Image 1: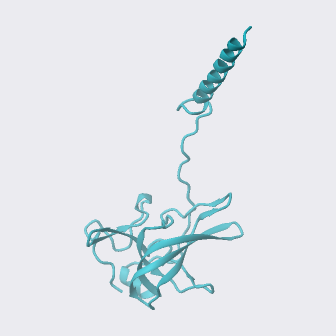
Image 2 (image 1 turned 90 degrees about the horizontal axis):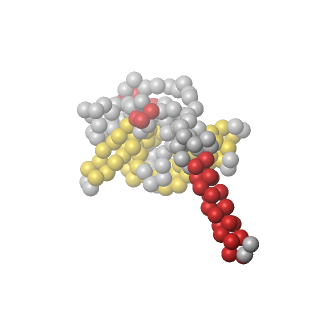
Image 3 (image 1 turned 30 degrees about the vertical axis):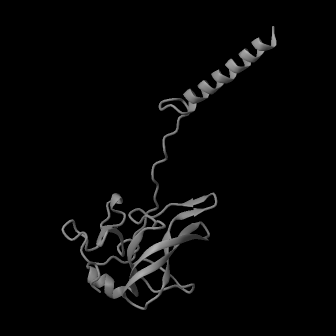
Length: 189
């Protein structure tokens, strides 16, 4: 056989191998095809749940609006916490700071994943939130009141500001935000 025939056979073999790989791994229903992994969560029973926004505001050490500018993780044994740095745009109640660090359960530390708590997804960099915060720990990091009640996502359209329930896709509503009240001020301390 000539060199051209060997090259043609080699090229055909590589092409067939590529097609077999595509059919085995990348087509739905194929033997080794994998769908996108479903969302996974941890579950918690919150120590404190508030009956009213006024009660939550009275118990909160600090109430602010701000934008998440960065995040880091802190791993304590098998638990991972995401610490978000929030640039404060408005202080509603409490001492005035430029930034505050806020801890949430869940995150990724290298190859180790600790899933966020159901109904309390992690904040995202660049997004704006209203936060009802607890007293700081010894490192100055604060928690969110009742773990999931004290946070709402702020969406701006020009000069208009709307506060949305954060984590609503998980069946949770921000305390005080009903469909009728959505977009209204939650600044009632």
